[in-house]
Amino acid sequence: MTIQQQTELYELPLDLKPELLPKHVAVIMDGNGRWAKRQGLPRIMGHKRGVDALKDLLRCCKDWGIQALTAYAFSTENWKRPQEEVDFLMTLFQGVLRQELREMVEENVQIQFVGNLEALPRSLQAEISRSMEETKNNRGIRFSVATNYGGRQEILQACRAIAQKVQQGILKPDEISEEVFEGHLYTAGIADPDLLIRTSGEMRLSNFLLWQMAYGEIYITDTLWPDFDRAEFHRALCAYQQRERRFGKI
Ligand code: IPE
Ligand code: IPE
Ligand code: MG
Image 1 (tube, rainbow, N blue to C red):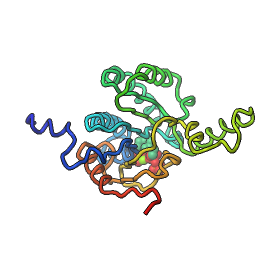
Image 2: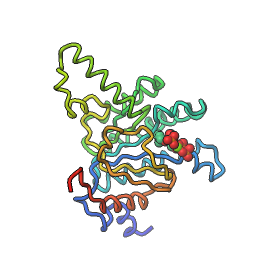
Image 3: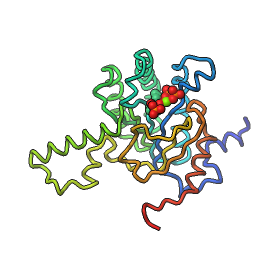
């Protein structure tokens, strides 16, 4: 690769307008299993390759000036998979976190996890706490990993927390505004995604960011997650920049 080509890869492509970039991109990283099957490999190999695709996307968002990235790593429904696959994923998350933490600290990434973290293996919880603690003062890209995340479950836990405050007299029912509600979601303090990308062609939210995606743009590609690269991301951003976001207006 020439220096010229290399620079082009890391700089924002010329056909993208910096002022029209999404501030927050969310991804449903789907299709790892199918990718592996097509290569004649066990499903877990797809998950391993999927990690590389995510690492590259994070770097790309950083290079191109996107402020926040949220990735769906494990849903509340994914526990229904074979135990072997679930165990592999938990071990994979923990290993990747341990391996990548130093670089994230240095690269000014602020990592956080959204979801019901208490149900995760203790050793993974420890690694998660450590990574959030060590990157909490970083002010570069905000990287959220949705782990044991479910949109319905997130909304319910917010309702419970709010109900408790009402019962204790801390909050009145008519004070429950959108802002107050959002403050009780796992994503409190993170702006809603402007663009949601789903790979592998499935046209559904699969319980991801149900509240937050009220007005987010959706982009679906047939590409399977391990094959999602900068060129694919570039295409998604081009499509996004063509959209007219009306928010109910005319
Ligand atoms: C997404 O890929 C990764 C996780 C849900 C953890 P899948 O494992 O769902 O891959 P497919 O959809 O079976 O191909
Ligand atoms: C969504 O993918 C969850 C993640 C990518 C972590 P799934 O593969 O679990 O979604 P469904 O089952 O096809 O809806
Ligand atoms: Mg899937």
